[in-house]
Image (cartoon, rainbow, N blue to C red; front, side):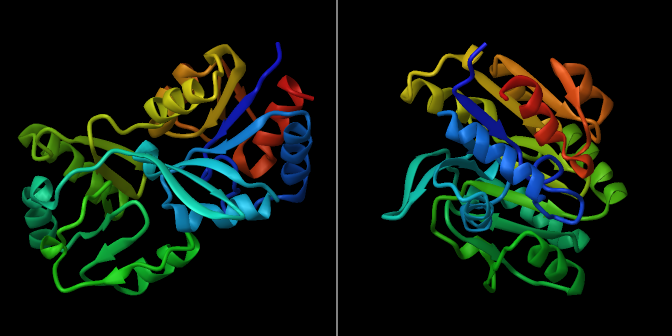
Length: 266
């Protein structure tokens, strides 16, 4: 089978646990690209922290960011938003109030920027790992900008409780809540997911689902893995994600993306 597009999750999939992209993986991705295959990063990251990964790969092109809420094209001429799914700050006020009362860290994102109300040493270290430079504001409630993502950052036991209570209370209203990692809960437009974004991108490029490979590691990758002709999970994925995959490759610490592309493309 000839594949024309490779959709790659970034953290926990493409990068190892040290947030490093190995030379072996870089070489394999470039070899697949040189065969005429599009490489599309599909990540929960914002564009500003995704573009350096694309640069490290030596590539340019379209990326799916904010867990599918923003599709962006980046090349030598600059950056262009291809598609975005937005909501208003009023839509998340009940969740903002909950997080403020509980002292749970949160940020809100527009397509290109992130805003926070406070930051501690732990959060500062986390943002630096993900190449993020958030803007500090007095209150995100005062923002009159279209938002694409609202994120909680906390320890797994805290977020387990939050996820349970928000599900019970339907605190997210008409929006969509997903667990994008052990340390993150994201709230977005109900239309925003990696699968929908990948479907729209493939249609615009006249690429059929069976010409796509999607590789991921977490629940926010399930829709894109299901849409692709071949959905692959890395070994470090939760069991439910591996069960949903067509094939399981090596972990992110053992160059799982390299192994998968070697099997299916080279």
